[in-house]
Amino acid sequence: MKIELQKNVYFAYCRDFEYVAVVAGMLADNLDGRLCREIYGEAFISKMKKKHRELAEILNSMYLGGLEMLEFLMNYETEEFSFEEYRAYIERMPTPQFIYQFFGYTATLEEVEAALSDDEALAALMDEGKLHIKSFVNLKQLINHRSEYLDLYFACMNDIKVPELEEYLDNYVKLLPQLEAELREQLAQNTPLEVSQHIMNKCFRAVREYKYHAFLPVAMLPRNAVTYFEKNQYVLYSKNRILSRQKALDILKVVSDESRIRIIDLLSECGKANGKRISEWVKIAPSTVSHHMEQLVECGIVREEKNGNYKEYSIHRENGENLIKELEGIILKNTDHKL
Image 1 (cartoon, helix red, strand yellow):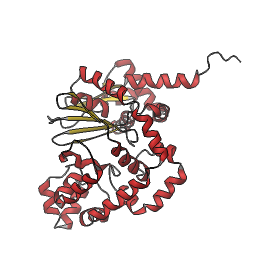
Image 2: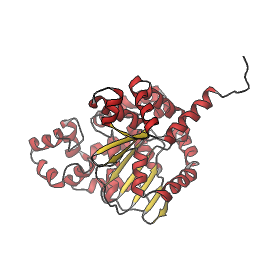
Image 3: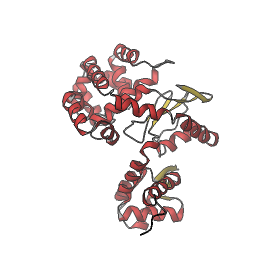
Image 4: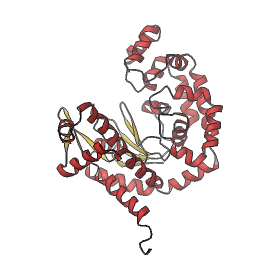
């Protein structure tokens, strides 16, 4: 499904992306796999981790835990997405281009080409954070045995296509018209780039013009959102109303800290504040403030915006209101009950 909302701005849904998200959420320990556990159960997940042990080891050494598989969308021109054709496209790609895209263009293509014939240069790129992977052995596996890696990935993806998942996704598809309407409303008031930053809940370091923007809700995404960009921008986001209670729990866990409550109190009172003001108000070190703000932004209760050379923070009102509604629904479920 692909709908053009404005010129070169699309709302789309691709069920195959759900399977990529499940593999990442199930096997990568650094991602949020709670929805996978809810649908599959611990026993099934344990079985998959044992069966796909080699793949799990590779995914756990990567920053996006396997969501890197979608980086190749940037130059993949097609109206109807097919994973079989997508895989063939990846396999045909020259090795330097494969590594360059797989790790999100963080190194230059020239750097990658030079490093492929020099292990020391390759390790240096990894150590500098230009190739987002923690294991040199796994990096060499991707370079020298690309087809074997894809075999592992697609074998796991086929194993996770169970009736329980398909039923869950069938129900999720019913929400798409409402999600489309919400996106149209946001785009009526903001540019596509501003909407992207709103979904990611942060300001982008580099702002550029894209050929087109695509917004794709993914029910099983094991992160709040992830963006892929080069000439185009793809924003995948977990707009999952079925999990509103879990989202409330995520926020409550993060804010159950005295310093973070004081930060929220400050932001509610003054509207916006930068890290320096928060540090002075709460009387904690700037480095500690940065850690707290990262957690508050990630859970969605605080919004981050760039103002000149500084970041400013404010309460994410929509998420705050949704949290209150969810708690009311739990605590005040039966208002007629009398003790």
